Image (cartoon, rainbow, N blue to C red; front, top):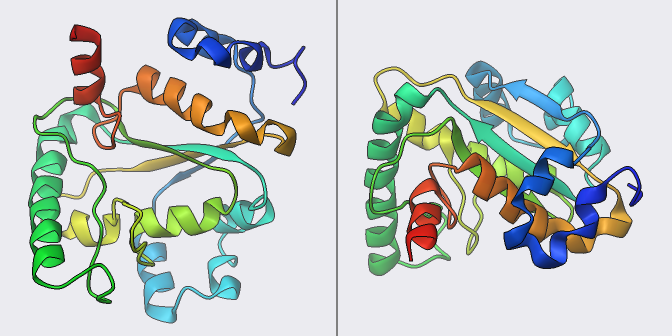
Length: 212
């Protein structure tokens, strides 16, 4: 990624005043996948070894670029937000209770990501970034592996709580290693633009920041 092709990189030092630069950001074509829960179930039942994980096109694409920094987001239909929010609110409360009664080292503990106090409606479920190892992070969000201290969505465990699991899509952007130091800045801009339902910079939290 060079400065001429990616003018966004020139503005991240003053990121809060340069949110419109996101429109100019040119990243390579992303990897996209509408989650097929049958595939996720198959991986979970077979054990998520690298060979099994990489036998599916989307996951193979992740593995091939696993050493690169990445920005990713999960998208949903806006109408599904109330049901999703309710399921995550329950899961978060159960996670907190589990943590109090046992601890994060217990194999049954799932550290659910930040869930805001109030419901918002958006097409974005979650935005995240990694300096490398995006494949492992996506596995965590899907609920194929536990994260320990790092919060994740654990979708495979949350969605069964819903009567009709929503269509959920994943989009992953990779960028060049020399720009790895921009990862958090890029994530911030994506979060503020897409306004996710969940996460520390969720729709709710962003609106609170702007109102203060």
